[in-house]
Amino acid sequence: MLNNEVNELTGAKITAIGTYVPAQRLTNADLEKMVDTNDEWIVQRTGIRERRISRKDEFTSDLCVAAAEDLAKRYGKNLQDVDMIIVATSTPDFPFPSVAALIQNRLGISQTAGAIDLSAACAGFVYGLHMANGLVASGLHRKVLVLGADSLSKITDYTDRSTCILFGDGAGAVLVESGASSTGFLGFHMGSDGSGGHHVYRTGLSSKIEDIELVDTKLLVQNGREVFRWAVRTVPQGVEQLLAKAGTTLANVDWFIPHSANLRMIEPICERMNYPLEQALYSLVHFGNTSAASIPLALDLGIREGKVQNGQTVLMYGFGAGLTQVGQLVKLELDEQVAEPTPL
Image (cartoon, rainbow, N blue to C red; front, side, top):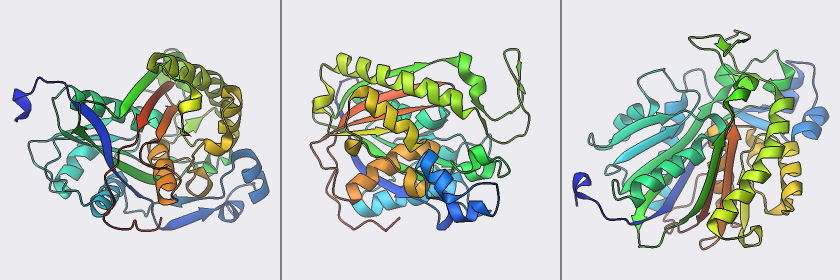
């Protein structure tokens, strides 16, 4: 059935996942030589021990290709018949062409496939999932490749000890495909508060938001205190609204995967939700804050460790610059892996 002939509603589910992180590690000990900090201080305040850094000649498109190839190898997937590519990133190789267009060519995906980049910062991957679900469930598309990837090391100010300790590079990819009439996507919630846009930004053509003058460094600038306050207040409220709309409760959520911004942010979020921290998955300990890649990395780590299983219910919640937030409740129905994943 051709895309322009479909009208029937169908099911949508995540069938495969792949991830990639660069080889180079930037440890807390390394950062001690760069700025006034130390391992104990960083771990106490963030939970991060190391992060991965892309090579000078390695960009977001390269991370995406490697993550997609990991997916294809592990699940025996043919990517050439993907009919839509969605890349969530804040660090594209270029303002244009899009990362999605670049990887369409490199992966040999059909030239009839759509290809777009999505800008929602650390909430981007979950927004991509939401869009993919809508496209597949509506019958407009059958096989959507969703990627969350960032090369934050390339826009990090390594003289600012409050931000350079946080960020790393990585990519995650999933396939969202049509399935049975029932769906793997159980509910969502989203929101935005543009009045807080000046708390996390990187200047571009403009160096003002409304009437607020921005520090024009061309690098990432973050007011961590304000973002922390907003996230700890907003995410539990959003989760409550999501679950109410989905007609379920936290007791039925097997795993909570918030954006891996900072462990000291995840802890109070779980506490306010009265949700066990040991059922929260995060990727920050060894990879840092990888923005749009942090949630698929955390999900895949859970799968690789044998903790996350098919049939379980996973609540992914992205939040970040914008200020944007989006949650997605998913029942996992992954295909069987045909090859062991390459160690991260």
